Image (cartoon, rainbow, N blue to C red; front, side, top):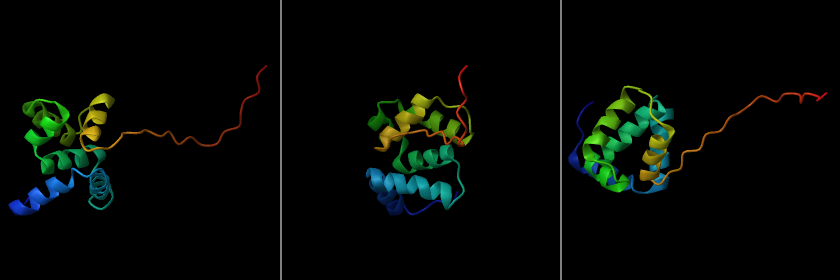
Length: 108
């Protein structure tokens, strides 16, 4: 990835502290740039800064770095860990199951 100007990175990091901006950034990464949910979270962590994100979530900076790599490599991540990442940005992870309408079975 091409390096951006330092002031762009710091401005984006500051904006990511706002949950509405973080939500919009996450959606833009997925819908406009074709990133998966995990890749988008990794991009957000990178923009925020690993050590700053570690302070915010109570994680060790080295663990945040490893986590970001696991997200990019699309490795399995526990739901609780994904939830912790989202909470670090002021977001809430909610999973919906969109089930097709089915007829209810009659009980015998």
